[in-house]
Length: 290
Image 1: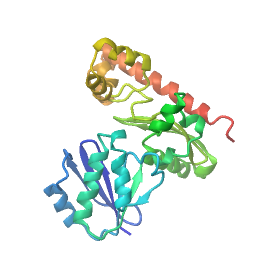
Image 2: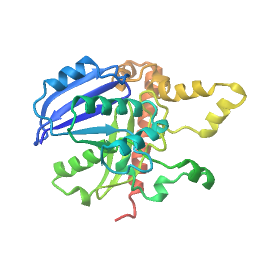
Image 3: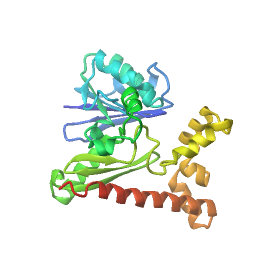
Image 4: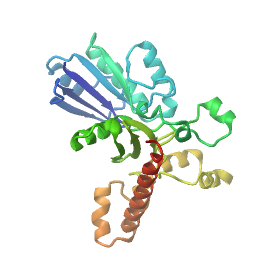
């Protein structure tokens, strides 16, 4: 079976056709994916492909109801759209990718695979915020976690490389990129992760702050010190390595740190401090579970 994997990011659309041995037969990336109209590059790529038997879409957020991969139908699409406010950068582009591929490959079965699904079974102690019950119940506030597809693969692959079944291992998996998170994977199941209700929680990332005192954010909003829009943009796009070193890519920050730039040295120190701290936390989350 040849499977077309569709990964709609916040600004691009990546597609890869895999054969039954998971070998890549063809791949492409459509830049500036911000429209519902299929671009010519997508038409050309799909028209040039050999047989496509199924399509798998990576979807960032499944919300409270979509907790496992699901065959795409109108009801599933509506549920994906219903949680757009939980992932406003990614969800609309994922829906646009679904619609574009469906239109260009009519009749080919499609499956939605959710980054939140791997963490859906976390213990209540890990998934629950210590917030008023009325808030949690009314708004569905909980720790969802993200990068689940990556963490699930990494933990399985680690078991393969070690020659030991993943369902007998305790693994801290690390997804370290522009967006970054850790997961505590106990016997093949996610029992904790560093991201929460949104991808802002946890590690220092390229442009995201990671763990931040919520009281500090309330203080910034009080008396108009910053606007709500400025706070949102600052936390998502101007924090993390970008806020510390002036550039978001750790590969660019490291040479400047090695050359003695004080801001870059601090950025690396803060990045690694948080990384070490939360790796230890993920390991501790699995204590007593055996």
